[in-house]
Image 1 (cartoon, rainbow, N blue to C red):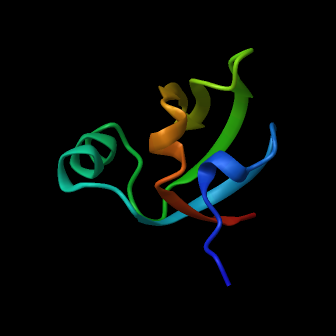
Image 2: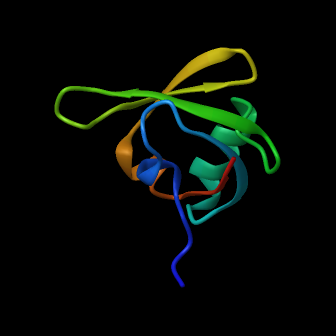
Image 3: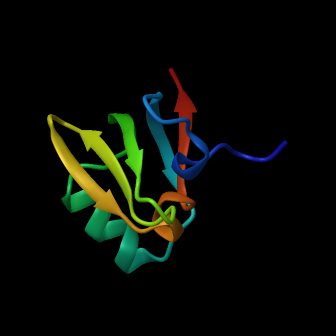
Length: 77
């Protein structure tokens, strides 16, 4: 069974962050921006070409590269 990622979430979908499959530097940067394990987030929209992805987390909007979103493991809510 493959893990679900933030990039696979439907627009408007909500999820809880369960982990990361990213390099240490990128993971640390995302955690500093509020994407920590257990944080709830909502996928707001994809850009017209699919990159970047806009996510609402902890009351603010965050734009992520699709490659970063593919490395954020989630549990849909």
